[in-house]
Image 1: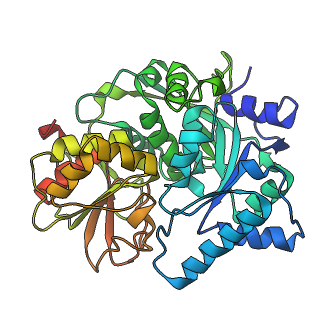
Image 2: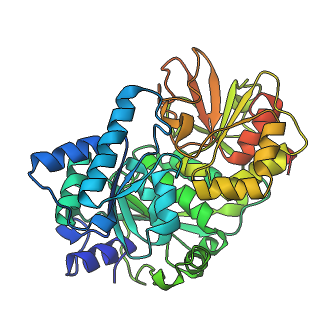
Image 3: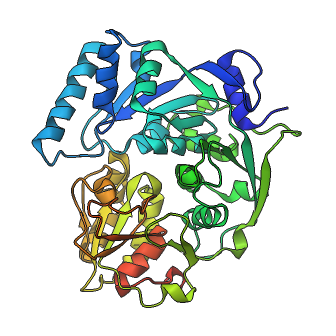
Length: 418
């Protein structure tokens, strides 16, 4: 029997494959965003390819600079719009949302093989797919040929037990895992999440965990396709896309880890590495003043994340020395948040709500830090300069921890509010 990674790559390669082998496999979805798409288009033109293997499965997302803050990026958008019109590729316009969220909502299903010119393409493994980021040139080839080459990764098993206690969420789990194994602890491995605790994780939880598998060096992060997956697809009107996937009973894993969800506490990753992780009760978390709080991104900008934050912020105000920025991860999420009154909660608390997209995460616009400022963000990376200023400091935590911190103006334990 095989791991989930081996099963999916075997099906797409048309033969049984094992870890360590090299394969050429059919790709179900290839995509790029406005930062990587222009290079992919240039490479396609350099290859002399005027057509695409599967235009309806080739997508360009305008999400990083959304809307564009300067003419150079506007010209990149124009390039992608023109190329999509010429080739029949799908274009996700400004305001539609982040690529990975949009793909989860309407494009990816269990057993799919997905490549994207963005490292956080691994998010989509939450649906029981093998999804991974590649460079623009490799993705351009996949767009042109409908195939890509892979080295079949070894797999690590993360066996989950129990349920989260109040105030603890999937962001805390993945930060704890990365803190334990290190930022290179899963380099080119498939991180596979199994065990009885998986059943307690909804799709939003799984998307958060899979999203950050690359922060441990992972090639992809895969959850089983199970009843949770089926229900999520049903909610999206895609129940017919469901197929069960799980590891074989005798699948071979390079290493296995066990986590009791009930023993976790809120976690914070300190600057400037994602594996620099501490529990919120650690002495290092005391009296750390925060200038800006950012809730959003492909990691934690879903409706469930906004609900958690709004529940804490309702009828409360942000600390006068702390700015709050909220960015829904897609138009669908934004509209739902409007209908539920969540946007009003954030604004009345003193926050700013921006249009769907990546927002401040990549430091292009909307929330660039000042010199020496500290930001607590729900994003996935806190590398030096990530939010547009190498003199800024980025801390990572859950939406609950972010909301509590916005109220207190310093790193705060969300369990005191829930």
